[in-house]
Image (cartoon, rainbow, N blue to C red; front, top):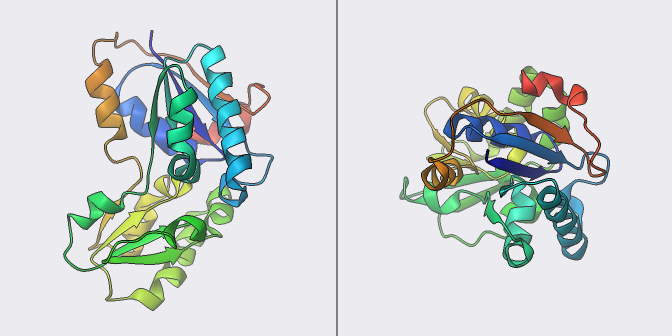
Length: 229
């Protein structure tokens, strides 16, 4: 049976897991590096080292496909990781290009400042939300909605759609919709699940297992049980 590995530094992995499970039946191994600084805060050399370690670990565990759920890791290191990965590897990138086809004016891009402030598109409005991860881990939707509302207030009336460029934000896509009910929201998983389903649709459709591990390979399903229900 197909085994898909998911790499992230936090709960964004579970949004990726949910979308992939809807697309294809497989075994899933979510590799979460939650005890170290977030990927968004690492130097590129350290970020690549962490990514390489994660890829090698998942390949050793029998993964046939690897999905980089972290937008930071995917945006900054995907090509280098693709070169060393012996199995199919997919990245989740900021969905700016896709969102830009939807509007002729403004695409507000929400994510870590390190990523969104580097985007070079004429109709992009960068909106750094570096504290989002802290709110997301609290699993308190009210606080998440309030945070999003505060961050978007200065840009009211200036954008037609939102591209969420952080994996943990995918899990709270509906919260963005609550703040902006008439605005289309594009997430960083657009197209990834579709490409995997198209390539691997020949695989059996029976239910597979789902394992969550830390960077040492220890099983930590209980720690994230709320996201696996």
